[in-house]
Each structure stands twice: as structure tokens, then as C-alpha cells.
Image (cartoon, rainbow, N blue to C red):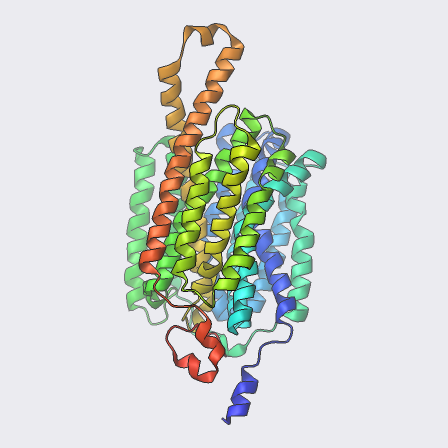
Length: 509
């Protein structure tokens, strides 16, 4: 093919920035849905008569379906077409959200949440892989992934704000109904604007044994951590689930090594850079989800903030994430090796976490919580940006969906593990503290008893936040040690010859 024809074939899509709007909108919907229901849960529980034992399933049903099916969703996107999978995912997510909003009983609500997770598992990897194959020029790719990274990082906090507003001023059902217009706009935009290259399609058959093994393995793992929270780490049911997860995931790896068309080609995860991204990102999300959980309870229960004010209190973190992602990460990504953004980013976030470990009964928001949240946001935004781009670094276009799914899998599994692990640590620390500080005065005075309860609660939160701090430091160390790629997209700007370089994402079709 003549050189001019080759260049014409690789010209960027003229509608790519419009496409980013709709891809970003879909990603925001999926990410904020992980937290928007948290604030609405007490109202939904009261309305539908959900028992205390079943209320956790409103969160867990979504996490299990989403986390367990992500790799399957990523490979479906590769096989079936990313645009088609994206639109189907949006349509299904809207339908599931409408069912959740109209739920008449507990079973209907839990079924809707599980269905949201199923279609979210189709939607999320399709969105990221569409982004990866749409933006191929170095500086544009950096900017696009900066915006996407800010959405992925800040979506959880936005969910808390939106959940508070909708619950306080409308009704808990609107935390579900709000997804319907989002999905309609994103789907219409995708049909009209997004163009997917056919050359990136994977024509192999679906690896059914791989799907069954990895789905049941990940569900066992996530459910095991959920059971640990309620039944204890040494309970037979908890240990049984962890053993099952290890056996199923080991069998999955063995099958993937032998099958002709694997669900997850091991080359995707065994690459040092991508492996470092998946591992460090998963750890960082463990720490971040812990912060969302404890700071929400702290502000509402201990400090008496309303749901809306609690959400607003997280805004500086969202602003920090957007700034870190678009102004620091995106500007430096083509000039600085990825590990020199990821490792310091996670370290800055850990310093923010360290500040927040000093919360007390009357802590000043402007003096301590605000700077802690800003540092968390800046650090996470700066680190997320190159991580999202590097996750599809060097993969063949036919594997873009499954490589993208691995990013979402590490985040979802990390979030589920973080919630269960840190909640268990906080609860046991609170129980121990209360047992050793119980006094006769507290027993006779209701005010003293409540103050003691709050002190125990804060002690549990700070203990868990210290663990989160350690996890973020570990994420920083892993990113610095394992991620050894140069500037992720720098070489792609230098023309056709650059595509031969192993350090360039092979996303040009």
C-alpha cells in the first residue's frame, strides 16, 4: 500500500471528541452507581421493609455481578464489537435502573441491582476499549485519558453528592431513575457519533470454560470478603469461599495456558507494565473506597452533617482529581515515564490519608479534612491518568476489550475487598476500644454514653484509615518497581516508524 494511503487509513476519527463526551457520560453513570445508592439505602430500607441482614445485598448484588462478569464483558466487546456492546450495555443498564426505581419489594430491588451489575460489566470495558482505539495520537490520547481518568476517579464522590441531593430533596427511587436519561443520551450519541474500526475485531470463538471458571472464581472471592464482614474471617463459610476462589482461579489460569482462543490471553496480564498497573490500581482503590466509607459515616453520625452536606464535603476531592488528572497527568504523560506520575501520585494520596487519620470528635473541616481530601484527589487523579492509558499499552487491538476489562476488574475487586476488609478492621477496633474504656459514668449518663460510643467509632475509623495509608504506600512502591515503561505515548507521535517500537500502544488500525 502506498505511504499516503497508509496514512489516510490511520487518520484520526474527526468525531472523536464528540465520541468522548458519550463514552465519558456512560463511564460516569457506571462509576457513580457504585456509591449513589449508599446514601439512599436507609430510605429504601425503610420504604421496602428490607431487613438489616439483607440490606448489604443492595450493594453486594451489584458488586458481585459487576466484578464477576467484567472479563466476560470485555471479551464480548472484542468478539461482538465494542460499539454494539456499548449500546446494548447502556440499554440494559437503563432498563435495570428503571426496575430498581420502581421496585415494590426487596426481591425486585436486589434483582434490579444484580441486573445493573450484569449490564455494567458489558458497558465499562466497552467504553474504555472504545477510547483506546479512538485516540491514537500521543497528545490527544493523553488529554482523552486525562478526562476519562478524572471521571473514573471522581465518579464515586460525585455519586455521594448526587445521592444526597436526590434522597433529601426528591426520593430514594430517583437514585435509580436518574440513570435512564444518562443512558438514553449516551446511547443516542454512540449510535450517531462513535465509529469503531472493524480491523480491531477478534474473530475467535468465546472461551466458555474460561468464562465459567473466572466468573465463579471472582464471585467466590468478592463474596468471601463480604461474608468475612458479617461472619468473621475464620468462619467455615468464609474460608470455604476463599478456598473455592483460589481453586477456580488457578484452574482458570491453567485453562487459559492451553486453550486456543483464551478469554484472557496471559500476555495481557504478564506484561510487567500492565501487571504493575492492575496491581497498584487495585490496591489504591482498596484505600480510596475505605476513605469514602468511613468519612461518610464520620461526617453524618459524629459531626451531624446532612446527606447533601456530606456530599458537598467531598467536592474538593473531586476538584483535586480533575486537576490532577487533566492538568498534571495529561500534561506530563508524554514527557515523563508513567511510574514517575503513578508512584508520586499514590504517595501524595497517602499523605492526604495520613492527615485524615487524625480526625477526632471536633475536628475542623477547613483545617484538617479539607487539605486531606485535596491531597487525596490530586494524588489519585495524577496516578489514575497514566494508569488508564498504560492498561491498554502495547496490546493488540483484538485484545483491547479484555485489557480494559482488567482495569475495571482490579477496581471492582479492590473496592469490594476494601469495603469488607477495612469495615471489619474498623468494627473490631471500635469493639476493643469500647471494651477497654467502658466506665460507670458512661453507663449512668446518656450523653456520656453517646460521647464514648462516638469516640470508639472514631478510633475504629482512624485505625482503618492507617491501614489505608499503608496500602497506598504499597501501591506507590509497586507502581515504581513494576511499571518500567517510558513515556506511554511519546513515540506514537513520530509517525509510522514509531509503531514498530514495543513501547507504543498498538492501537492504530
